[in-house]
Length: 72
Image 1: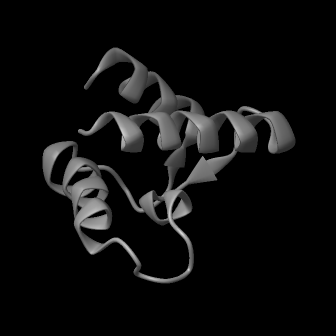
Image 2: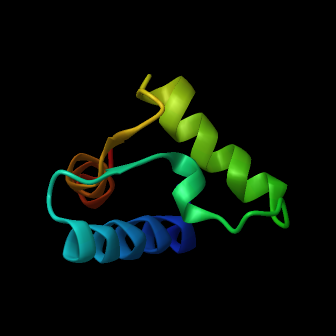
């Protein structure tokens, strides 16, 4: 996963956790605007989320953050 996506995921998860608590869920769409302005990056996130880790549509933000920090 490219470093810019890694940083974006961590930042978004940190923000959501700070606002809504540790039980807040996210999907990989949370890391993108409501338009498809970077399809390659979106596919990279989707591949990591769906094909690599077989995650559900929504996962706990703390789990995703931990996975990204560990480099999973």
